[in-house]
Image (cartoon, rainbow, N blue to C red; front, side, top):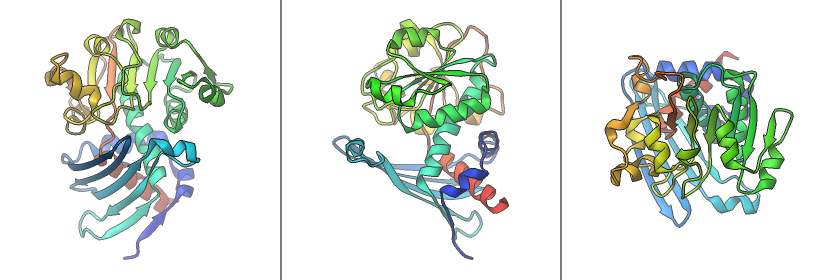
Length: 303
């Protein structure tokens, strides 16, 4: 059996609706076995993630995260993705790391928004103006085609560089948060940027950044005010600062996490009222990489 090499050209055959459907289907299969390995060197991270889903296959994804790369004109995140056959364990495909990461990360939060954001969402705020924010414009547009976007970034020039007919750069974060229907934060902040006091009834927040134990994007008040959801309890509660830190200090409890994606089938992963504030923490576990990689490979083979 030959190993398939799937590069960026596969993107032309993908759709956000198709990926969300594949992720939902993946969570109807037996619960994923997941194992993560993290190594740290100052601000740099080496992340080795593996997942196995009976009926879908197995995957190993290795990523290096070096925030200083931007000054060198290089991507902050690099790595490799290997996908293995479910029945034989044979290496089936090498899939472009950046393609898998981009679609997995955006698709993860898009799935949450499809269940938690109000259907009439029109005003979307992006906090952070990096690669992830640019992907979210495309992903959210598939779900909310009439939406308009605002983007805030610590460095105003980066936000202005994202500006377009549909995306407006803003400088007042508090006012932008208060005016938004949906807030998506994708930063590497180690201290909260978004305050609970700013939040308005009916808002939904997708938190994508804060992948390390020392990172936070929203303050304790925001967590207290919102109904809390995660993509996976396994990859967030004891690993990611946004959840781990406030639990350790007694601000919230594990039982305050209402649901993860394995609860979609039961109907627990949903908004309960129009006035409810919802927060979904995107942990981006390897099982989601596996679902995404399998979807990409299937679409590539069907081209």
